[in-house]
Length: 318
Ligand code: NAD
Ligand code: AKB
Image (tube, rainbow, N blue to C red):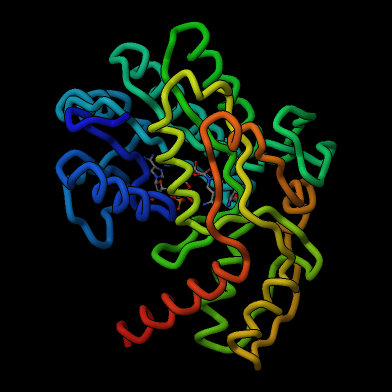
């Protein structure tokens, strides 16, 4: 359990997940116990923020020591689509940030959260109900970095006793923050454009089925695994995590139940090949059995919450 003496550092706090995670952590542990950090300043800040380039190793060490950090959530990364445009940079950021944090965690006895992704799987992986342990062989630099990162996490746990915990997130959908350059980003963009224009052109084809999750469930899972007793966290590479799966066509049909005239068209680009190499659905039974993971949202509930919240947010900024 995180106690009142814990001090949490979130690296990459201004991104899609960080924005919501910091809010939720601060509601639970208090503003001053959660230090946000990123290259970019947050849009709204209700607690301490440190500007940090995580690749500046000394700056990272200084912040950890200054705030007497006991837990790190490492979210800074280049995602799948952006990674294919600059593979060397994606590898550098995604790998070195993790290695710096794991080394620091070893020295300072810090608990670490680091996310993997469904991108760690590849086109030889069983596509439906993808098991926890199976063929991996990712096809993107982002995917290589996630698979290698998983191996490093398990290694630091086994060799040095580092308390590192990880989830293989599916595509995440939320209304509070924008996605940061992934293949699943269409599933957020579609809601904005449905409300603004009544239509959307998808960069993935109509029948592309991918595992997805509402952000609120992802945050619950993240805090859930970090708070679980250590002995319940039996997998120290990364746990499969599932919400629900859908295609762009099915998501459009669901949006039409709220916006009947909504229209979707398709213009697949380079992201189609990435999506085609990923699973269509995930078996997350080990996460459910080991530390009690259970999602709350399905496609319908997520769609309704996205449209209701984005509609009020857009009305406020008009
Ligand atoms: P994001 O791109 O929205 O946010 C990443 C944040 O990291 C950005 O705010 C960026 O400014 C910051 N950052 C980049 N380089 C940095 C540096 N050198 N130092 C400090 N900060 C830096 O990404 P996200 O969607 O919030 O993803 C967070 C993590 O979750 C990543 O590891 C990602 O691979 C993983 N993940 C995300 C999803 C998803 O659907 N969002 C799915 C699977 C896994
Ligand atoms: C991406 O599309 O790159 C991410 C992910 C599933 O890792 N959303």
